[in-house]
Image 1 (cartoon, helix red, strand yellow):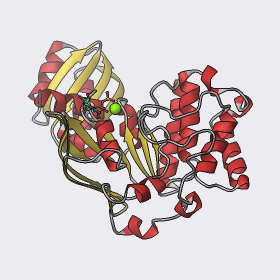
Image 2 (spheres, rainbow, N blue to C red):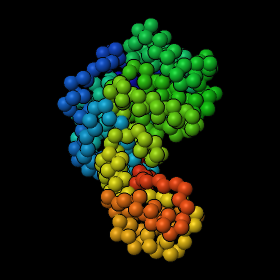
Image 3 (tube, rainbow, N blue to C red):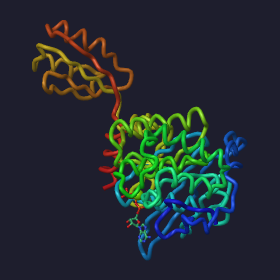
Image 4 (cartoon, protein in one colour):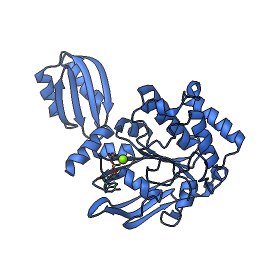
Length: 347
Ligand SMILES: Nc1ncnc2c1ncn2[C@@H]1O[C@H](COP(=O)(O)OP(=O)(O)OP(=O)(O)O)[C@@H](O)[C@H]1O
Ligand SMILES: [Mg+2]
């Protein structure tokens, strides 16, 4: 069985003394799967379910993630996200249904799935008594990277993540965010085709989070890798994900591009900042057929519009009424609003 660093405290992991060396060649993983990228989705889940005792943690999930996509798996605490990742990696047996990754059934092909994947789960999976450099060297050996690859890739990642100066320090004394960065370096070390990131920016400062988001986008965009991301940061999901699945109590509530989910949450909106807005003007705006709702708040006019609405006509109406318009912003519901709407609907 391949090593599962960070896959869970109870899972088999390589020991720092090297007694459980991985039976796979990571170098083969680099650049694999070109044909799958074009034809088969990297992940396919069909009526997948997992019970713990009588409790349904994952309940009839069906979805597919095309290769090269950043898939955002969103849901409240305890909704089944981490359990789904563990099912996909073959770390848990499904109670019902099927998960297929790279065309391999997770029950039968877990070794191959893990060989071609990297995973950052809830536990960072680092050896606290080793230095940062030693940790990466150790995992590089487990992935059977050559000495040169270990050195070069380790150096590249440590520098990139801003850990180079601290490479000779023991990880045990590091802050949560610093460990998280090193754990990300561990995940990317063998250049996996599929990367599971379970709340990767939790505990990172805003600069480090933005930098990681940039890296994730580059991994999927430039390098064509597939990323399975869970996050409670919905702005992050909106920015990064080409496909989003929303889960609650183990069931999939919605699946689509963030724009589709936002569009489903409501029509277009506009916000007009102006001086001299009054109740009479508000009443005239409300009378217009393209305006679904209009509200005046702190000198801003907030509008929910119907599809195809002409904001210029509304601005002209305000100016004609004597208002001084300073700013007009158009937009739609945010992913966060769409998410909260879904949670309310299914309460
Ligand atoms: N090994 C287990 N034994 C019993 N119950 C479990 C086990 N693993 C998970 N569960 C339960 O399954 C449900 C889903 O847990 P999971 O960790 O998948 O949630 P999550 O969506 O990742 O939540 P969070 O956002 O808090 O990380 C929870 O109610 C949890 O208690
Ligand atoms: Mg979780």
